[in-house]
View 1 (cartoon, helix red, strand yellow):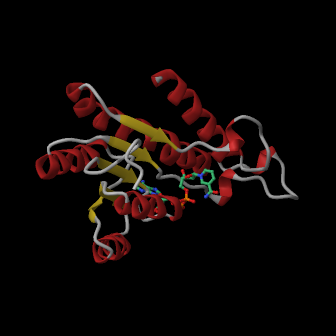
View 2: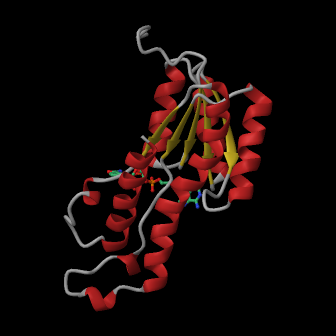
Length: 180
Ligand SMILES: NC(=O)c1ccc[n+]([C@@H]2O[C@H](COP(=O)([O-])OP(=O)(O)OC[C@H]3O[C@@H](n4cnc5c(N)ncnc54)[C@H](O)[C@@H]3O)[C@@H](O)[C@H]2O)c1
């Protein structure tokens, strides 16, 4: 175990905890001794990952969430504080894309469905801002903490046709710089 950058006993909260990256990162951090809280929408999958982490000797719990709902996320935060007394790190890994917010190879800007564009902005960007606002409070009170936001290379240049996703990730990069 790397003692210099040890995460042993640190309480690490991961949104999108049942996703590809969130679950992998959670499993790895638990192996390094962190107390991992996976937050996601799919309880069955969350419980499966938590069981796997525990079977390997790690500590983890799963909480159902919706990162776009402040009341739900506040309840998640209260439950975590009740269980562990603090939050050391938040990883905002919830996100996603929708077909209507993407321009198909044969399509143009006129094919973008505004409703789906807004949904993609919301889940990625607002879904990063809300958990940050809520979990930052106990970190500020404790005088320490770390937040990792999940942006994309698409944030810096419009690499592909994922218009809504790229705009949302550009917002996340800007928000992260703002916070820093
Ligand atoms: N995988 C990559 O190559 C890659 C590259 C750049 C950025 N990212 C970003 O990293 C993050 C994780 O990516 P991933 O590959 O694990 O994606 P993923 O789709 O496997 O996981 C994202 C998770 O977010 C969850 N989610 C969606 N809406 C939610 C909501 N309202 N409340 C709570 N959870 C919600 C989904 O259920 C899913 O489990 C995403 O933000 C993604 O955009 C991924």
